[in-house]
Image 1 (cartoon, one colour):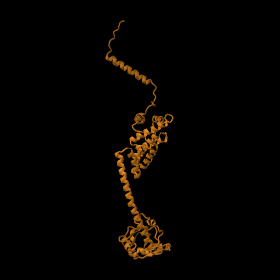
Image 2 (cartoon, one colour):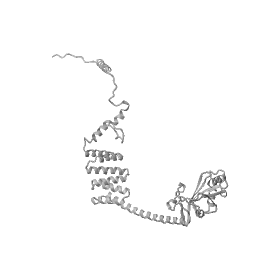
Image 3 (spheres, helix red, strand yellow):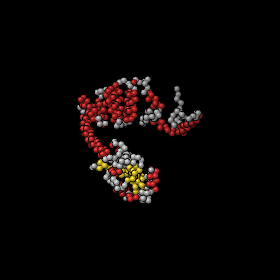
Image 4 (cartoon, one colour):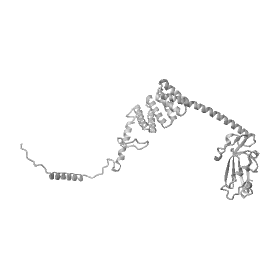
Length: 377
């Protein structure tokens, strides 16, 4: 068979052939029916959509966040009770919880462990692990009481569970249940001596001693307080003062300005919080300490030494004011400036309310005073 001679193709021919093929391809593409591509990700947010894909996502979905359909399908497959045994489901939730715990997403971990417990797989070891792991997550969130409850439940499923024992001991320490913490430490140390548990036990012993010492101190303080309160109430009742309530707790002032200035004894003298009201201007003065042998003049002089902002006309001066109190019969009674507080309080017509003596002040012979007295007569 003879071979026919072929001349080599030149560069010009090669370029011409390539151009021809390109044109034919372009013509073919142009002849195709043009339809928008709807199956893929939009160009303007392909990266966002890609990150929702289970294979490419950079973080787990937040609780309540809408899932990608593929992710949702995988989860349904993973947690499908028809495809998994109860133990497999419980373990799946445990793995999810462990993953979140490892990444310090303790709240998500708690949710996962709780879902695992809801399965009620019937395996005490798995349930004990779920409870202890949930206890650990609560512990790191400083939910010590919840953590203690879970660790103790774990011990009911698995009494020799060392991790649950030590977790329970630490929880008890944090909430100052030192006696119980020492009990758990002793159980651990009987099985195996370790420095960490020994140190914790020592802390609990010190904490217990401090708690007992503080309790003794508080008891002493309470006893002294009770003694003082009994003496105070006895002093008030023996003085002949008429109280609206003979209970000491009802002597606590009800106005915020005097709340920390309850009646008390200074040696043998009663010291009261007192209110002066000025109906003409609807304002008040609060005297935190008015001893029962102080006369009204002394306190009025201090109050009116500088005119108040509301006293524009500077009418309120000691020599021109009149003090009144409202008696048990709702009548208004005058008080002389040279009278002592104790003398007024022992007036048979006076009733002391809410542990705070209260008095009304007007400018003597003023229109406001006359109007007030007229309406109260």
